[in-house]
Length: 70
Image 1 (cartoon, rainbow, N blue to C red):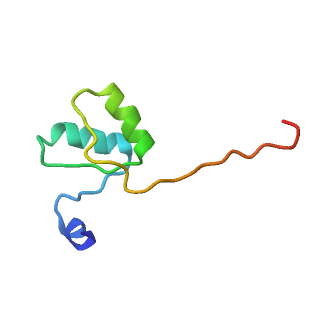
Image 2: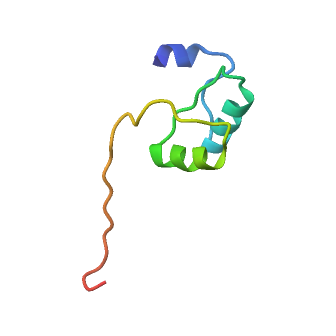
């Protein structure tokens, strides 16, 4: 997959999620963009012309550190 992506012209890479979303919207079904699942959830709730295909590729857990007594 990496070799294929590297060989494409124009490049398949984007510099930001915003650029990726715009490219999908203008791509007429010819471009898919992968992003972190929380970002996809946020974007698809705000743009009716976009959808998530499949589920998350993996899961991550997050923790929040606070000073004692907070």
